[in-house]
Length: 312
Image (cartoon, rainbow, N blue to C red; front, side, top):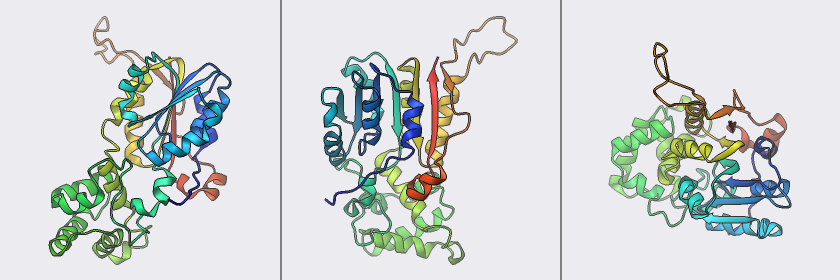
């Protein structure tokens, strides 16, 4: 594999948002290239601890090398961050001082042509798996899902306005031969979208996002794990979440609002019977976005939104 460079989006904003302290215990649910984890360990020196998760063997190997100067202070678990509760219990950790999620696809995965994440690598087989042990690939989605399933995925996960036409043309094409490469799928998408809309960004962007989300189950259980993570913070602990598309951001925003909400009883009742209480303070009333300087240096930061909350 080519040696890739990984640039962490809004690195300073994320670390500042965590308010890292010495002796703290932190959780990085999306290890990736280890950029955030490195800064957490550096700022929490000499005694801070870190637990990090990732599904990608290559990313884990690279991160271990990057973090080796902090040997003994970090634990890397090959698992999905959505297994947070089990991981916390297995490590016998009661509470964390800070939790970070960077929900973007790693640069390692995007830039590795053989992984099939990019719609620009046209001769590559469709894959899009973050975890190579995952049996579901983009090729299986494209060739095995029904027309209605494809239309639903493209409309909901990709917010693709031409989802129905793209799904129709995928089904027609695969009846002749299986759709195997990125280029074959891109051609179908381009032929499904009216020409006047072909210049509104790359025509395959939304479809590829939708299929990637489906393959990796990116939205499944996200709401529930954000609730669990916030509730596993120490008083004053921070949860910092970086999203890269509107679907993720809406889920995080909804979870934060649920946690910030106080009693929901009918106001006519003399006493509270719902038992609901405010659990967090939302620090970012509006999400933080990348600076102009960062956008010039890293175009992948364009869609990023950062939300921060603190346990009360």
